[in-house]
Length: 500
Image 1 (cartoon, rainbow, N blue to C red):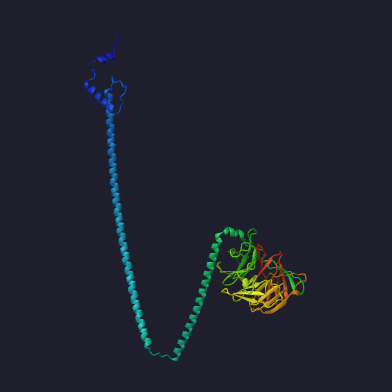
Image 2: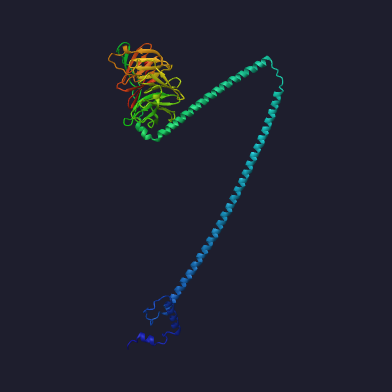
């Protein structure tokens, strides 16, 4: 027997035949699929519809997804509601806290204003009471002055009263003197502090350049030198000196010294290369530099420097000008028409007299220019025609004008009259050529005169000369109270205490 065909059996079986309800459900889902955008040219075989089990499973899955989406939406709504309630509660709490803080601050401000007002009111009341009491005392004093009571003092009481009054006057005078001394010390301290601060600021502006341009003090020989003396001619001695210390400047951008001046424990040095004057301490520390190149346009011209209590004077003998600077580095006045002042042609060797007047020599004529403290010019004509030109000029502590011309020293008063003449030709060797470049009177009758190589220490009364010379040739500049021998880039300081 052959096995029956399943397909024929299924098709012929009446129980497996689709019912009308199933056909209607299929038509509904077919319409749904078409309405959802299925293309019309779909070639799906309509003769093989999906099974009812698949349709039921798809419907169940769709229903479950919709249910899950609804549940998730409900959960999100609940979370949002909770967040909303929390934000509302936090905002309410912060607002309440801010209201309480502002209320407390307002109360504190009101209390402070009230307390301050009460304090001011109490002070005004106390001041009014004090003024009333003072007025009452003044009224009482006026009545006593208008109607003085008789004073009965015996001799002892009067003597004690006089002694006490004298003691009080002495104490008051001492107190005032101490007060003025203290005030002067404070002013000096403040002035020194101001100067040091200004110098420090100007030094720190370009510290690298300053350290490159100027070196520090280098100790050369701290031991006492032993002079080696020998007779040259007459009463003259030759001495080789060793410097106590030396200030060495940088050779590339160092000092090209034009002149040196000493004032108030400071060294004022002309720097010809940079057209400025530099300020050093007595130990050789660089403090400040003031430029004057814009007022002296000539290059490599010879300038001199002199310092008084009010001004720092720069004298240029090529362009016939004198520059007066304050101690703060500000140009106060420029005297540039010296040729109109008594045919004054070549200002040279500036110095300061005892009245802080500037004394400048005319190198080509027999004249000395006096520039007073208010910068008023006057001319002193030297009544002497025996000197062709003056090589060095200084004013001593008695305002005596001293002029050096080769081996001759001449002394003049402030009126130009000659007081004395010292001819030192017999003290020099016959072949010794001496052209003094700088000169400085020293205490105890000594005179220090410097040449470009030699220097001699001359005593006016004894007519005795000490020749001073170092190992190397140098351009010498003398300073009151000490000796400073200056080369192009170094300063050598010597001790002359053994000769004075």
